Length: 138
Image (cartoon, rainbow, N blue to C red; front, side):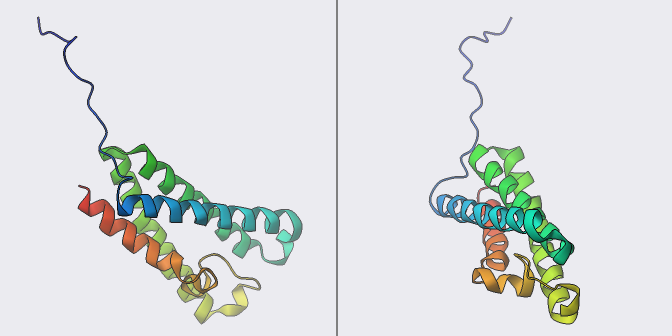
């Protein structure tokens, strides 16, 4: 019988080191910003721009999941964060284009409006940076 007492548990590969720590910090800031903005707008003026406020809420959930995955670490979390970063980038590009082509569809801005211009373009830069970091940590 194999000796299982001396086998060390498999360690998760840390994703929060070096530039990864900055990514976690930035995603955390985006969670707070998007969540507080969408929660306030949904609770006080949802009928004014339901699509915009719902999209901001969805962005907050995506940011929260990526933050959690980066902190959790490990290969499964890395892959999940990579998929979410790709989905986030697709969302930013789709919503950013939509808000430029059909601005009347958005009576109020979302986190991803105009490719994140209201957030200093961090919403379009962050997923690209995240995907590069997560690929490097493979």
